Each structure stands twice: as structure tokens, then as C-alpha cells.
Length: 396
Image (cartoon, rainbow, N blue to C red; front, side, top):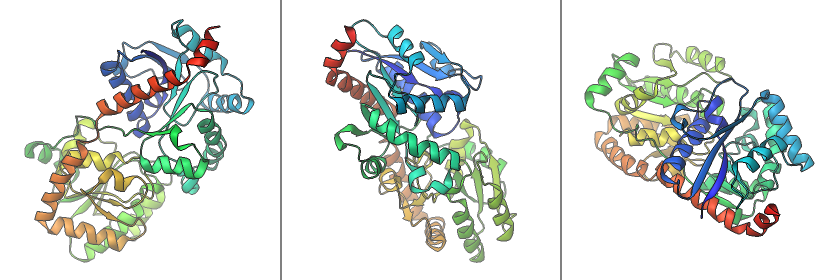
């Protein structure tokens, strides 16, 4: 059985973080590995002037051109009115064979209303658990929209068991409607050679060993806790500096002020955006990678670091324990003393760090995009099979 899918590639067109990686990598592997089951068509709203990723140049593409706010609001209105989103519905009718309707896959938290089958990927419900970490306008939109989107979707993909529990607990989603499909780690992320690690790390911390954080600078990443832990470690004589790799998100200025207030100006490097090819050597060269986040729907940096043979200390909340397994040290996200103690263990006990590196590589190897694409293709087929009566009605 083959399923035609109109797939929202928008996150990979307009963004550059975890949602973009999910949309692009999953689409690439669906096209490459699941062609027998999935006839994939790409869709995006062309509000930014960018196009679909070059890695998907051979895929059929459909697009709208609408301002971002107008696009989001029109999607919300279609759900409130329970009226099919006509421009995309026309694309779906044009792209599907006569034997079946086209399934729509929303890869981010934005699902238009359709009478045909839909799949919605839910990455996290941070706006519900920590609304102060979103803008008020975005919180309003998501609190109204996500209840409608999750209710309307034929099937939900949760990227972790934690996100699945949130969907069930907060929205009352039927358990059999929510399917956990883990994301994958790119083959790019593997242990670098000593020479490559030295060459890249010399650019960011040439004279001292370093701790590393990777991710957009935003409050839920908990950089403030890491800085307080670093200040405590400096008082104990630790030589390491902290390298923070990632674009500046919102509320970045308070973090800069905290660095100065803690006397860490010479001990913190804001590396900004680091090219993808430099991330593996940067991970490999780190004495320890930190992810003390308040909440993660998945937590890519944990697995990237592990795949690159770096020891990891991360929070013991949200999805991080299930992603990290037994390969990381876990600490509470509000306890900088516990974080400092865990980091000190890693950097002062080579045997422990070596065991964490070995366990981390085994743990990271469990998360593969090939597996993610295979499970997603199976879900598409299951959704299509369960809706055969609707298919017959659609054809008539």
C-alpha cells in the first residue's frame, strides 16, 4: 500500500533550529528510504522568500505566498470554523492519485482544518508548562490553537514519551492516538580525530580546557544556572572556561549582565552560530557538555555530544532522562550547586569521563533518522488503512 502525503517542509525553509532539522531530515529519509510506501509532496508558505532545502531538490513542491501572521491566523480560523483550508485542499486533490485522498503532515504546531486524514507532530508543550518563556502573543496563539490542532489531527506524533504524557495529561488526547517516534542523529555527529578537535577548539578556547553548551540563547536553556555553577567551580580553582555556541534568542541581555556580575567576563565565550561541520570537533574537544534546560521536547545536543564522545551533564526533567539513558549525569534544573558538583566529578575523574564517553556513543547510536522515517511511513499507512470508509466517500 502506498500513501500520498503533503508534507509541511516550512520549518526547514524558514527556521534553523530543531524543528528545521526534523522537517528536513525526516523528509530526506522518507524520500530516500520509504519511496515504496510514501509518495511525498512538499508544501510551505513562502513568506520569507526562501525555498525548500537543496537536499530535497527532486521532490514535488507546492507553496502559498502569505504573510506569516496572516498565514497563522488563517489556519486558526479554518479550525475554529471547521472549514477546509481551500488553497491547500486544492493542492491535495491535485497531487493525490484517484485511488485515495492525500494525507497532510504538519511538522510544526500549525495544522489547517481538512476533512481528509492528517498527522501532526508535537515537539513539546513548553508554552503550557513555562508560558513565561514565550512571548505573550505566541502563548495566546498556541494555547488556543494547539487544543484545536491536536483534537482535529487523525494521529499525533510525539517526539518523546514525555511529550506524549503531556498531550494526554494536559489535552486529554486519547492514548491510542499519540505515537512516540524518536528523532535521529545525523551521521555528521561522530567522534572527531584529535587533530580536528585541536584545530577547531583552538578557535574558541585556545589556552584552556572548556565546558560547552549548544543551543539558542533563550531562558528555558537555563544558561543562568550554568553560569552560577561555573562561578562556583572557579572559586574551587577549576581552570575551564564555558563556551556557549548558538544564536542569540530573546532575553539575551540579562545573560550578558549576569556574566559581568559573576566576574566571569574572561571565562565565558559567546561563540554565536557555529558551522555544522565544526560542531563535532567542538563537542569532541569539550571536557563536559552541559544541558541544564528547564524543559526539552527532545534534546538534540545531548545525543549529538554523546555521538561525538563527549561526557554530558543534563537536567533530570522533561524528555532528557529518557534521551540520555544511563550515559549522562542528571541534576535538578534549579540547583547550581548540584550542577557544579556533577561537572567537577566529570572533569576530575578520567575513569568516569571515559565510561560516560563509551556509554554515550552506545546510547546515541539508538537514535537514527532511518528508524524515524520507517516508523513515520508505517503510521501514514496505518492512518490510511483506518480511514478506508472515508476514502470511498471522498472518491464519490
